[in-house]
Every structure is written in C-alpha cells, then in structure tokens.
Image (cartoon, rainbow, N blue to C red; front, side):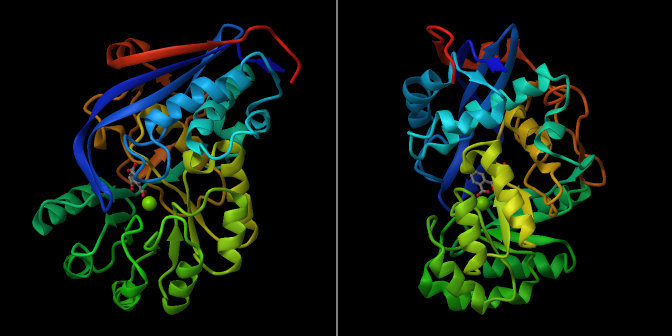
Length: 376
Ligand code: OSB
Ligand code: MG
C-alpha cells in the first residue's frame, strides 16, 4: 500500500522551439500544469496535457488547475492505495476533467514503479524494447516550407509523417507531397475541421494512399464518421472522439474508425488507456500513441505506454529537440536514425526530472496536503 502525503501543482511557461499550427489555432508558448506527488520520501511527477485554451477539448490549463486543487487532489491525499489503478475510483464523482485526472493518476503509477524498483513500462504491461516514432507536422507558412520540414524529418529517420490539414491546406498539399515522396508512410489530421458537405472531397483522398485520416469531423462524433468510413478505403482514425473504453467499443462496433489514437490525458489516465488498448487489441484494431506537445515528463509517460503490444503503428512521440530548446528531463528523449526510441528499463520512467530548471520556469504553485491518513 502507498499513501500520497502531498500533491504539488505548478504552472511552468516554456516556449516551443517552433510554433505549432493546427486547424484550431497556433501555439508558440506552452503554459503547462505539472503535478508532483510525495509519498514516504519518494516523489513522482505527472504532466497535465490540457492546452492554453479549451480548443482541443473542453479542458484548459486553468480549468485543470481549479479542478485539481479543489476537487481531485483532496480526494487523493491521505488515502491508502494499492497503486495507480486505485486512483480512478477516488475521482468517480467528478465528471469529465480527464486531463486533470490523468496527470495525478500517472504520477501515482510512476511513484509505484519507483517504490517497486521496476520500470514504469513493465508495470503498465509493456513488452516492447523500442517504440516506432512518427512526427506530426503543423500547418506551415507555405508548401515550400512544408517540403523542407518533411525532408528534414525523413532524414532524421522518422517512420511516418502526419500532416495537419484543414480546408485550403489539404488536397493540393497531399498531391505535392506524394509527387515528391510516393512511398513514405503518410497520414493527415484535421482536428475536426470538416463537415458532412466535405465528404465528397475527403473520399478523393483515397488516391493518396494515406495510412489514415485522423478526426476529420466533429470532435464528439461517431455517427457521421461511420458514414464517412463506409465511403472510404483509407482507415479513419479517431482521436478527440474517444474518451474511454466504451467510446472505443462503440466506435469499433459501428465502424466509425479502423485505427485509434490513444492519448493518456484524453482518456483520463493510464488505467483507461490500458483498457482502450486492450479493447482495441481484442477486436483487431491497431492503436498508436498521440502527443500533446508534452515536455519530457509527459513524453516519458507516453514512451512507457507505447511499449504495450498493440501500439502497432508509429506514434506522435518524437525527440525532445523537436519541441524544446532545452527539455526539463535528463537525458532528453532521443530518436535513433531508424526512427525508434529505446524504452528505458531503469526504475520508474527512466528519466530524471530537472528540478532546478523547473524551478526557474515556475510561474505559480499550490500544495494540497493530507489532513490525516484514512483508509480508502
Ligand atoms: O490532434 O494529435 C493532435 C498537438 C496538440 C493538440 C492536438 C494534437 C497535436 C499533435 C501534435 O498532433 C503531436 C505532438 O507532436 O505532440
Ligand atoms: Mg489528433
């Protein structure tokens, strides 16, 4: 059993090495909520992947801060836990707010791995020694700039190129990319930029041999994605729509998608991410690990999760240097020339958190402490 004595919240501000643009907006500076949990002299970290604005999902860093400090952390501290898997039950009365919940639950898993002197990857059920890496390339200032970026990422070894797209940055772009690179593994991600009236155009993308088309329609939709999938050869991949295992089951059953992007923050933590992974595996649906422009803390957790067996496709888990001039962990996440990350087999996440650097980047903090130890 373990008991969390204190939860520390901090906001750090960190500029991206290069701006990232999607159909819902452009990010240059990240505001990130980091969680640190303390138990019996050990400490572990979690990263909340909520964005600066509630544009990807309903959560933002500000809603996550409020919910963590007032609703979630008070339910966590002082309770006796078997491990990270005990955490979701403590939060059951709080609806939604999955990114806030995930940061706390994931920190507890990390702490439990440290306590058991094992790797986080093996505690989660991971079996892979290396994971396959792709990159997500934002909307660029010009097609020429995009071509240069793709050439650079292919040269770095990345196994799959994902292009962010939106109306006006889609069919013509795919044509140009395919003319230059007919055989690379290529996909696109619309972040819900299209509507039913666009289905006829989207159906034409079957010509581009894309690995998948990610979340083309509404962020909360299954039905219209199913209509679209019936018209396409190319698999639809759902990201935003999949909030939990039940969503995965519904989406697979009604053929809304044939691939699932698992983001541990989006589904509320490692327990639910594993449940989605297993449900998809049982039904023969491959999954891959999505990214949310994480620092090394969230990235290390994504690497551990990606070591599970049904993470069969390259994920959006890439090198630290693509995001940050200097990361907040050591060593930084590196990708081999073959486009792989080696899953650490050391204790915990396998990366050390740079507390001194985090201290310099911190703009606000709060602590929630256990009043007394009680039985869960
Ligand atoms: O939809 O996958 C997405 C970034 C922010 C919000 C949503 C998404 C993304 C990415 C970037 O595609 C993935 C990454 O490199 O971290
Ligand atoms: Mg996506």
